Length: 263
Image (tube, rainbow, N blue to C red; front, side, top):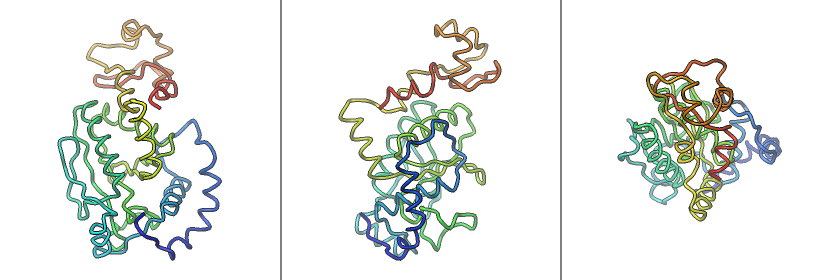
């Protein structure tokens, strides 16, 4: 569990009461990665439900590492850990990075870059939210790729997983990155169910139900190849016009119907 921080927990009770109502309701169909006060509320509620401690300093982090509540996160062929003072996280965050990193590299040919993991309260940057869950070890920041195809792929996966209620993700601008708060118990259950059913998860489904635009392609030529209409391609990809670009990932069906097959 990671211990209790009763003082912190009491300070979150008011927010938790409100968020219990929000958390019990189905997530809105139209999601985004913009973030909101409700997003922060859900992250803090998850920390409270898991009875996670908000770590105060480097010594506190070390105690949790020694106790096994936090595990080392090391660079590998699928993701890189870049200049992080505390390269540790909850075990489920490690599982998340292992799965996502492998499929991200397979999908777009890049290595996922991790820019932040556990950050104790005394090591938070100046622009960090005072309500950040980084001190609990359940959050990870991912660098925003310069490759638009890779960004489209990653954002689609994060939105799907957010819709499944296993994490909250926000697209941050300064510096450009994705802040992801993994909800350990729901995420571990989600992965266990996928493995039990033999499913590969939303990441693989996105690859199978998509088309990568090549030089010279138009929506009309892609429609002919895929057996869809131009209108269907526009609707599935939220396109207002016909402009596409080489390397772009086009979905070959409505987002909800494509991703529902991954569950």
